[in-house]
Image (cartoon, rainbow, N blue to C red; front, side):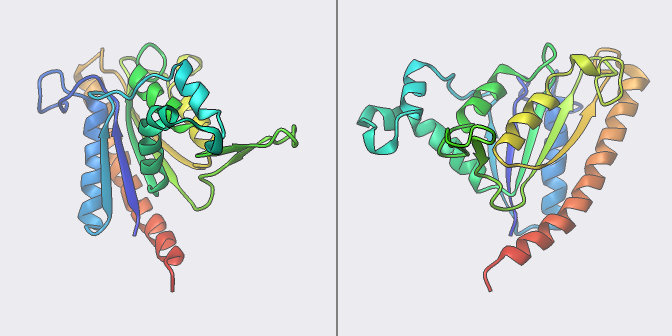
Length: 234
């Protein structure tokens, strides 16, 4: 059965419309998971709130540990990489990655970038072969179909595909690049805009995003559910 990894990255802990200064991106991710479980109650979910509990930033010791072959690693290196191993294991177990990611200053929140740095890792999620310089990297999460759902919120408008500010949006492109690099090929993006404008423009954007989430859930519960059933051992 499909397994979901649900990640929220907003610095706002609450839900928009329910809590003061609540998060629109959290609202979308919780809607996605709630509607998914209404249709497929047996499917499992792992939840991680990097917005409130950010992963560690990588440092010199992390880099030294991650690029030391396992047989040569010292005990302290395993301790350094323990957090990364936990985050990678969560990702490897998932068929669907649901990320709530507000657009902060044209890119992803620092806490989410810290998560990306912990899970894009040679030997765990991507392999590197210097003997094939034209194609040195092999994604290790391409072993089965995986989907990533990026649910975002933006203060302004026009940051989406074809928008006048698309060139200033480095959230979905950066996330998609990192996820595709490790083998997550199916990426779906939905965003709420006009947070700063408010009023009817924001309300319309929220309503449209929620409609799109509902449609995407209906689509993926069918396609991913069928794929997972095909992959189950006979």
